[in-house]
Image (cartoon, rainbow, N blue to C red):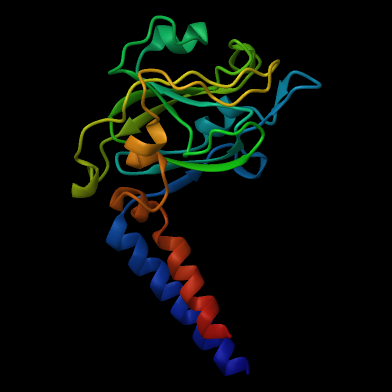
Length: 215
């Protein structure tokens, strides 16, 4: 039994090393164990996202993993004014996007994968509650390095334009603007429909395979 355990651990280390070398990219779970959440009773974010981001190194092809619910939004922008104002009012369809993971019901669990495809400053925030969540700490900036560059699967057009978030007060599902849902057209936001996102989940698959071996 002891020898089997050692063999499994050795295989695990080898596969993790192989996967890391093969992909060269990193998954970053936003907020760590705290996830991407806002406490409405205390009007505070689950953690300090600026501090979390300051302790990470981001490169092209990496993925941000948002563990959240539909009570929060995931807004990605390259527009610093949009970020600082906690609103998408001045955003254009080419610099600001919302990811909803395909779920349009309020208060539903989500895991959203956002690949990093633009080098330089990237900004993220939640504009739910008319920007209150952003103003209360649900916002962070990252600097994306070139690293290994983009994998071929991510060299494609950016996601579609911004879609308005659900209202905290009304607790209604997100309102879709322009007649389209980003979850249906933005493959980066929907797990399992984009090979770029599959890179983000490669290590998970390796771990699952090892668990099968153990059993």
